[in-house]
Amino acid sequence: MEKVIDESVQGSTLTLERTKGNTRKLYIESYGCQMNFSDSEIVASILSEQGFDTTNVLEDADLVLVNTCSIREKAETTVRKRLEKFNAVKKTKPHMKVGVLGCMAERLKAKLLEEEKIVDMVVGPDAYKDLPNLIQEIDEGRNAVNVILSKDETYGDVAPVRLNSNGVTAFVSITRGCDNMCTFCVVPFTRGRERSRDPLSIVAEVNNLWQRGFKEVTLLGQNVDSYLWYGGGLKKEFANASEMQKATAVDFAQLLEMVALAQPRMRIRFSTSNPQDMTLNVIKTMAQYDNICDYIHLPVQSGSNRILKAMNRLHTREEYFELIDSIRRILPDCAISQDMIAGFPSETEEDHKDTLSLMEYVKYDFGFMFAYSERPGTLAARKLKDDIPVETKKRRLREIIDLQQRHGLYRTRQHLGKIEEVLIEGPSKKSDAHWMGRNSQNTVVVFPKEGYRVGDFVNVKINECTSATLIGEAVGYSDNN
Image 1 (cartoon, rainbow, N blue to C red):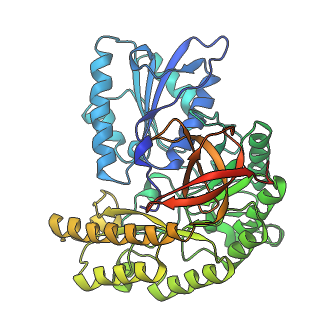
Image 2: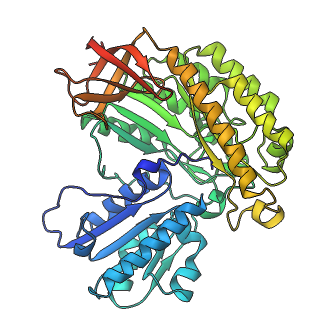
Image 3: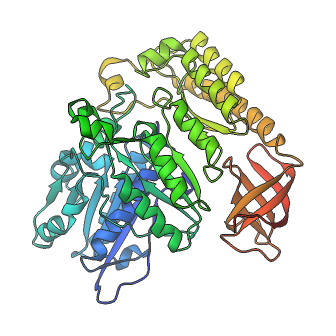
């Protein structure tokens, strides 16, 4: 639940330019969060070196991969239906091989390979470098599996290809795994314990993206604020590091500054943050550098202290408010978004009202809201009864969404009449005559195209708004071009 799921890109196929000499075709679909889509780019890069070009035509593929998510039941159901489709095509193309990657692969390895026999290969999120060996196995007629979780794999030495990219914005992974054992979440079990990537490799990737024309990066991790590099290894083993390692360690605020200084004209974003790990130093660093965007995704999940404790969220409602107050004081223009779960086990009407009152206090710019879905393997599934009726979950979720829409409109109205810098990402989905981009607060802005181009930083006067979109007119280029 920590991770943002963009419904508009679920199941996207990834394609890139052909590599001379490659003779085999890879078809890869991705589901879940931004981390999964970033991982698919790493997979495509590794397989490009093994003779595979990507295709978006399933029937042309020699190898079909689906990068999976276990966060929500809906994602798993969708993937199973896709696997049925792949196997139907496979009957007419026997040499085609089908593999499952990512979080669902880690959790359902035996079921997919041995019981249901619907895939040839199962590859966990830390085993992508082993793909050449695994493909050799399936080429020789044997099933292949590697779901071993690593203590140190970060893929920092793999330059991911940018698939289906707009050429303007890109994700850069900075951590893998998670140490926060939230009771509703499968991530620690499917992606392993937390480890951070070498900051120099992160800066090098950002520099490379700038040289290739990208204008914005999002530093990506299950919990970016917990980033800690001390020479490699698990975050939880930092206590055993040498005095020199501790003295030269790099935390997230320092990494953020390194990236901002490396490319002063490049926009920097990050996701996802965790309330108990976000420090004042991070907020102060954001305030210090103009190219770090004024936007924080700060999942809370519930407004009730009792439910937060049941979720094993290591913060209280009051501590969350204190963090919100610090952000508002240091970054008055900062947008804040949320993740919220309705109907967690044992949630009462009073608990639900606490969530609504928390939302009233913060008035989030936008949010990602879900009804609780029990995920096999989580602590909640093992220890807590999913005892909230479906209709009650739906009603509470509807109330949360309705309140968020009111707050979203309240926030977008605050932009009316202002001139704001917008980075053009592409055409508007609703009008070919308009561009779509985002301001520093990550709000979508739509305006007439005129003579501007994708990748331009443009000053836009905001004239109208909906609860999620700003509508305006360009008044000229910003100083950032």
